[in-house]
Length: 173
Image (cartoon, rainbow, N blue to C red; front, side, top):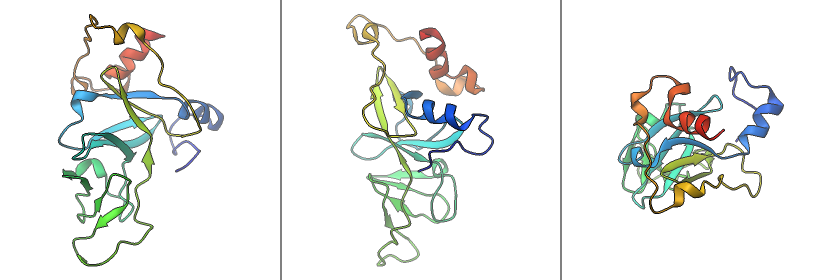
């Protein structure tokens, strides 16, 4: 985990650190189901996924083995499997399976760089730096029984500025 912005993010270090410690909506909850979902937050490529237990999780979109995008992989029960060499990662980001060496214990360096993830208001929220207690912003209206959420699907938007989560942020600010 890094406390610096990724190269080319366009953020100054201080600005990135401030923003990275807050929760940001990155996807609609309903869109994170059977396959890993690529998202980008503050210039950082990430993968959001659900394993067999249904809990939403996130990690940097890079397999520690050869750097392949985990979002190109697949979910197999309680494992996120890299598309490149088939390395499998558990809910805590530990490598628990190497197809080329089935009986071998995975080296400890083969561990995903996981990101704090939560769900609220029908959205997946992430923050890049886990620096103590920080709550997802409260939107009491969105918690009301009679609230109707009207957000388009993420894939209907081609730019980061048009994504549903950015539209939500613009509406709320």
